[in-house]
Length: 169
Image (cartoon, rainbow, N blue to C red):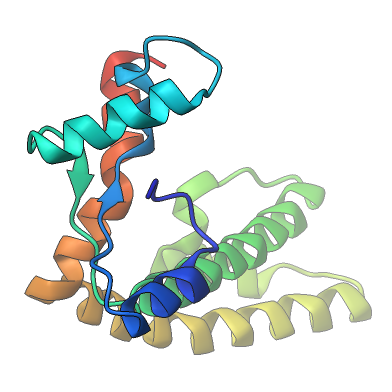
């Protein structure tokens, strides 16, 4: 089965029925297709590749923990990025373009000293509080991802993207 996401329910069903599930790298499967259209002959050829131990299988963790840690961390990082972008916009509206320096200790001190209107000041304060709460949580999740098992999960999820970046796709 191609590793395309939204299939955990199907994997669980197959596991309950006693079937072994192999996850295939979609990019590799696509390169092994002779024709662009999917036909039964093409599916049969892919099954033959499986029989010959030439199926482009990728490692997949157990279905219980597969994406939850990484997905949660990914979403929190996205939220943190939005918060940081809003803080950057506040600074730019006041004529300051500090880029990454804004999130250093010195940049933050300068951001907190900016004279803003009352609601802009409140927004800045709320955004900084959210940022302060998110950073430790993201750090904790990053540490969990860095453990050996979770590290393998991360690389397996990033592998297709890394391959396409190397190929210039």
